[in-house]
Image (tube, rainbow, N blue to C red; front, top):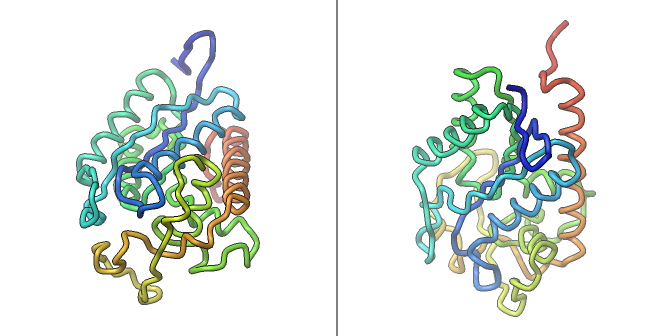
Length: 242
């Protein structure tokens, strides 16, 4: 089996949005991470022939955000198992090329572990992941696009701007406030969220605009569509030394 026929459409690849349900300050909805990942995934699938957009996973690993209600969370181990079983389901139907669009930092370890471990046992399955759209979007745009903390932050300038593009009706800018923590450079400190912000927000969401969100969203979708086309041209083979 080399692909799956569904409603007269042939799918040989899929995109899986992975999000979370957790507090994003008073100005953004709990499902922010899921909404953004799903929006990007759907847009990419609409521009790539043979790509199936899977339903978004709305709960991720959010224990480190649990000091602000309401946070729904899976353990990293559980999320690894869920991801592996989704990947295996696709493989069983002959869909052996998968792009994961992740919307939440706590999911990254599980995504990396699930993808790498599954590929060891099933090398025929090809898996790619956009692990941190909030970093990639900033890298794709000109310097100076963002005003505060480089656009980073949980419900900060970049993420709030994206929500003003994805679901502006769910954003209440009158309640936006943030905090920029002083964190060490080049070494990751494993914080609990309550230790680095009193508001459940990092960065400065008051600097967010819909125009910045449109720029980020367009850049990410264009980048991923180009990536998939390049991968299809190379049969999803990574470059090897000749």
